[in-house]
Image (cartoon, rainbow, N blue to C red; front, side, top):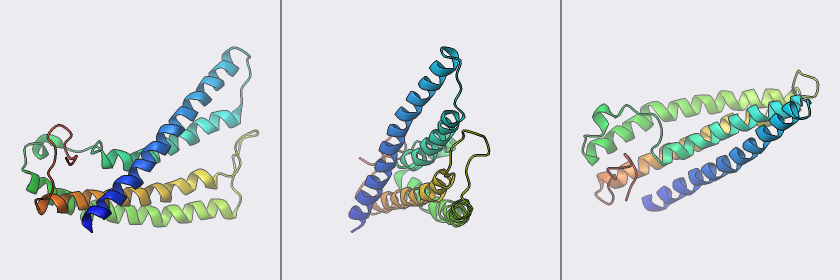
Length: 178
């Protein structure tokens, strides 16, 4: 059962990573288009510039759960690296329950309200030629935090498997299971 939950968490966060990679390619093309239009044709599109920021936000928000799954998130490794697998697992369990899940719940709750308000009033860009439907990018805040919660759940399932002796953390990748 715990292995299936771990598999689901890994697949869900890997999907986030895949989507973030695709969006990064779109952002690259968008920036290239914007630079060519600005410096070659002396033409500026406010909508395309705003799209750069929206794509960057989406890459960041959807890349975070993937980074957590791959154990690429920010962590103070001074002590953690030298600890045993069991101690790492306990720290990951306590950290997820104490810090990640409450923060995820808070941001998801208020982020959903934030996105709903933007949808309700039909919020769009204040600039002429800017992007309409600002609720789309704002809705990525609670969505990405749901996936961060799934990544934290995956971190916990890995920790439980380590504590049960059914898995261990790899040395080179800090928290990856082998």
